[in-house]
Amino acid sequence: MWKWGALLLWFWAFVAGAQEKDDVWVLVDTKKLLLHVMRGDRVIETFDRISIGSRGVTKAKRRGDHKTPLGVFRIGWVKESSRYHRFFGLNYPTLSHATRGWLRGWLDDPTYRSLIRASFESAVPPQNTPLGGFVGIHGVGRADRSIHGVFNWTQGCIALTDDQIDRLSRWIGVGTTVVIR
Image (cartoon, rainbow, N blue to C red; front, side, top):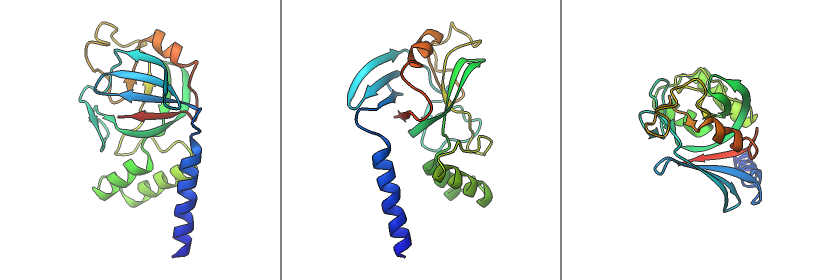
């Protein structure tokens, strides 16, 4: 039993130390449709008129639901050139999303174990699970520019204009914390 206690203490120490107060992080406000670049508790830059999933937000995302997952994420990879101009992929599904999905019967044991392993190895989790994947922050790219900022149009991502995503890329990269609330 003491091993679990030691592991839990290590995990909380890791989480607490992972984000220094002066580090840059991102706060996505899905109600006001704003993305804030933060340093500690200070806003450095704000991007307005963002778009989220066409069906809103959820704590329990599933593949194809067109909802943006709520939670705390890290940027796991960057694709500099994509159909959405630039793509910052999030480490979704996180351990909390995986556990919620497993408890609801949406994930089988091997898939759940692979998501646990990715979480503890700080690796990009499998992106082809029943919980969905390829959730990130991106530009408009080849999508319909006329609806951006007017409708929430993504399949679960956070979208900015191409100009905004270019400006955002100066602040963030792999490892940056992203809070979606």
